[in-house]
Image 1 (cartoon, rainbow, N blue to C red):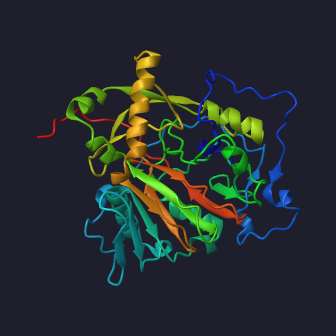
Image 2 (tube, rainbow, N blue to C red; image 1 turned 180 degrees about the horizontal axis):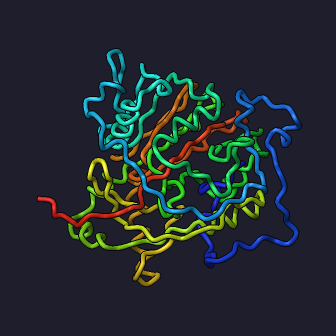
Image 3 (cartoon, rainbow, N blue to C red; image 1 turned 120 degrees about the horizontal axis):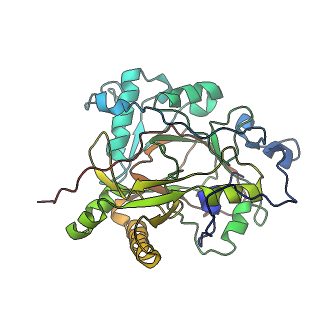
Length: 374
């Protein structure tokens, strides 16, 4: 299974910037999930089963100019939410569910409106989609409209398609890697935004179901803009101007130890703790326990205290959280810039949970000046 933020221990060890150390006895090998299953599989979409190819080595990411399509979108959504489309809010502050539209058939104007809708609602679940049945390249071409594809440095991917990040859990109770993950934890809650250690982390993100248990395996989302709004004005003002270090070194080391695969050398980057969204202008907290390590300029005790308060504030915020239930044909689209999410590991009957993620990069995080709320 792909090493992910949810497999990093809660007490994250410090890994110094530099080359990730590989134990001498471990060598990267070309691993395929279908081989793990004995050469045959019950997966509904075997082409999406993960592989770990040690030949996939890439240079550091170069800066690129992101085009934010949602800025030009018609706010009435005529090309996205046509007559007959049904939109239901999951909660007042975050999340919507949409039926009656086929994402793969959207025009460029419809895609622009999709970016706007997702920026406004933070996460949108589209039902009865054909994404999983498209040729893999066609699905990638759709996602590529929203930005440069991010290739995950350590996760499993379909053979020949490293741009697709695969989420995969399979095996009877006691045999899954998630069982070892839960061995020393009481809960699977692991709030995070994806790969925030990159200089330009992802924005509009797509995740679609391939196989899933009949019940359970939901994904939780939290609205980081509303989490910011609920803070007191003095604390909001103090957070402005602060930056935090986001690190990919721990994830890379974990990937080396589990699969032997790291496609790019890991990086650290500093991002503002309060981020401004380019479409809505909203300010949002931009920290997560998975990848944020420290606040620049603060002593360790000060940094830990403030970050832990903010992490707890986000995780306790049931007023700005939504739960998305998966079903066949579901595509969930979220804005990684203003949300955190967590999978739930609440089923133990062995059914496969298999999803594919397309994650275009966005702009480098930036902040705008603090404005006191009147």
